[in-house]
Image 1 (cartoon, rainbow, N blue to C red):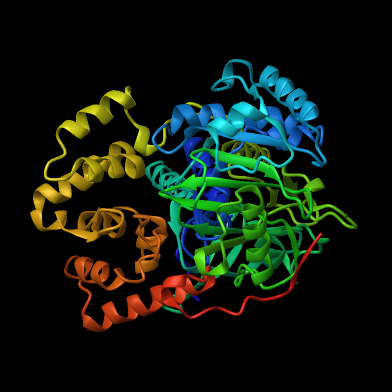
Image 2 (tube, rainbow, N blue to C red):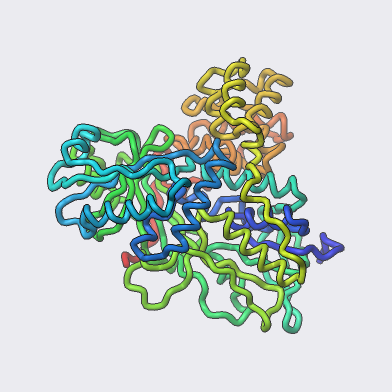
Length: 549
C-alpha cells in the first residue's frame, strides 16, 4: 500500500460537494493543511441536482425555524457580494387560489415578517398583487379560483456547478489538495481515534492511505456508508429524493418564477425559467434506494407535469415534451416516524464522534444557500479538536475567483468592449459562467485562434472553454467538462449530438487518440442515462423504491 502523504495533514475531508469544498476553502484560509477526496467529480452529487435557488429562508418561517431563516438571509446577502457573476436577484410570484392549505392572508403575513427579518439584506420588499393585476401580468396562469398573490424577491444561481468549481479553485489557491475519482474504502481506526482514510484511485486501481489529525465526513447522503461497519453510530442521514423536469418554453409559460402549492399534496413547488428552458420541481419523497442510481420516476414526471398543466391551462405538457430530468437526494438528518418530509430540518449539524472515535466529525444536513456558514462551523469544530485558536474566518468577505475584481460591473463592461473575436452573445455567456476568469478563455483564444471555434451551436460555447476545463479546472473526463465546467451538457439535448465534436476539439491538446475519443464519448453518453434525456431516445427504467410521504 502506498502512502502519498509522508506528513499527517490537519484535515482529511471526505466529499467534494459544495459543503466539503467550502470546508476545505475555509480551513485552508485559516492555515490548515487539507486534502479532499471524492469518489466522483466535484459537485457531481447532490449539488448538481439542486433547484438552483439561493433561498432566503422563506419556507422555514412556516416551521418557526428563525435561526435558519436568519442564517439563510445573511448567506444569500453575502453571495450577492462575493459571487455576483453567479448569484442573481430572482423575483417569484406566489399566487393564492381558493382551496390552498395556506390562505393568502397568512402568506402575506409571513412575507411581511420575512421583510422585517431581511431588513437591509433584501433585494426589495414583497408586494401584494390583486387577481386582476396577476391576470394581466401573468396571462398564462389559471384564473379559476385565483384570489391574488405576492411578488417576492429571492435569488438564483443558474449554474450551481460553477459554485463548486470556484470553491475548488480557491481552496487549491489557498493550499488544499482536491482529489477526484478517489473512493474512500475505509477509515483508519486505532483504539479510540480515527487517523484518516484508506482509498482507491478509481482510474488506476492504486490503493493508498491519507492520514489526518481530523477527518471530516462531508459525504452528503453517503455519510452513513462511510461510517458503516467501522463506527458505532445510529443512522444519521434521512435524505429525501427531489426530482426536476426540464422542458422547452410552453404556451403560457411565465417570465418569472412561480412558487405555488400543488393540488395533489399541498407541497410548495416551482415552475421557473432557466437557461432558455423551464424547470418544474421538485418532489420530496422518502428514498431508500441506491444513492448512486437516483433516477426520476415516471410517477414523478406525471406529478410535475399535471401540476404545471393545472396552473397553466394552455401548456398541455406530456412526457414527450420532457427534454431531460434531474434527480438527487437531499442530505437531511434522519428523523424517525416523520409523516411529512417538509417537517425535516433543512439546517445542519456538525457531529463529533468523540470520545469513542476521536478526530472524526460528520456533517449532517446542509443546503446550497448556507454552505459557507456550514464550512465555518466545521472548521471551528476542527480547530477545537486540534487545540488551536479559532482564527479569523475570511470567507464572509473573500470573493469567489470569478468575482476577484473591485468593480464587477466595470469589468463586465470592459470585457464586452474588447472580447473580439467572440460575438456579444458568446462574451456574455463567458461572463455569466466564468466571471473575471473569462479573460483566461480569451487568452487561450489569442494564443491559439483555432480555439475560437464554436463547438456547440445551442450555447455558443467555444473550444477554448474545453481546454480551460481540463488544463485549469480539474476536469478528468468529458462528462466533467460538459456537465460541470462548460455546462454545454445542460442544453436541450444534453450535448448528445455535439459530444464527439467537443471531444475532437480538445483531443490534440490532451493527447487523446481516436480510441480515447471514442471511450470518452461513450462514457459521456452512459453518464447521461440517469437524466433520461429525450435525445438518446433510450428510456431508462426508473427504480420504484421511493414513496410519497
